[in-house]
Length: 419
Image 1 (cartoon, rainbow, N blue to C red):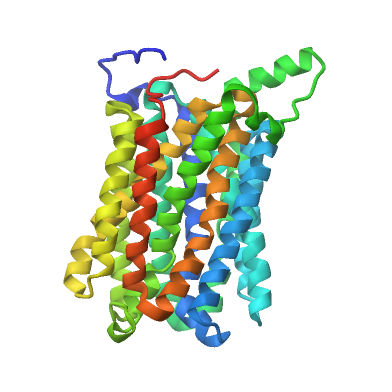
Image 2: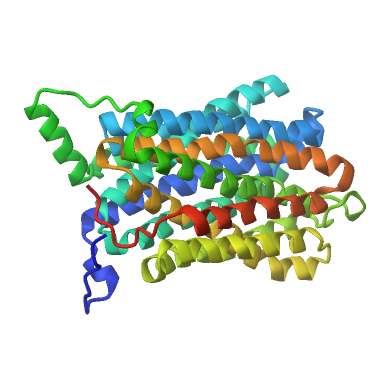
């Protein structure tokens, strides 16, 4: 592991235009990915009513999207290694925006399930393409910050989904909310025009061209040699972290809007929207500060702090029904219950070599997402008997296991140069 170089310049003055461009491309794609995916959670109560779904089915459709996103992430990881990070990023955005739009035409649960499944393919692809683009474009000493800034865009998109639903739903209903999901397609066009491929990837392709060979990244390469242990560790850590996140944040909008006697907080739509926006402000700071902390103190310390605090705060949040207390507690829950995602892109990039980096990132992150896809269904099922708030307490186990995995097995990769 190389030593970080010390500079008297503010960190942001060391960043090139190409690096900023890559960050904006990945960040905007991630924000709009978040918006399109979370629109479902914001209007889930209305969708369940119109299409006659119970909480278990509502959770299952969220699970279905996460399952397909796992497939998309693994698939697009290989596409990004073969054809380029920016091309993969652009295509993934086009896919999730188109099928979010089509969700608005759903007449049955089956229609909605099909569109949500296809939407998930693009959702999974966006993360891996953007993560590979950023981690290969930014310098090692600022890699954590960059991924923190990109990951923070998820909170922006989550809050934007709440605002879109709050404004459009009362006027055009839940279908109109989904129609708004086509907007991200415009970003894909912008990305295609001026975002460059990382230099390290270009050099690899140039070398392949000289040798007249073509890279064919295979998942099998992740399960052999020295990278096998990182594949297993990355996948298990992703399972625990994402189970906790999706089990909680898929159902928070419904929790806030569900009557107190049914295990919720009993807030009206305007209060729910406001509480979610404020909560996601906390998430934004969590994503950003995790990146800075990871670059300053190391990846391991940042991960352990966030996972442990999430394990403590999430059950407390679920047992709270007072609106004021939820308003105060929410940003802290989101800060620690979301911010750790900023570490995945950097750590996974630092564990895998260039030729299989996106494949490794895509597999680990999205294998975890695929298994964690059961979380919305599990929490929805538990909610039918004990209520949503009580069901949230179950998620502390996932956060606690994630902290143990980091403590016992994850190496410190701070400052590692990519190769």
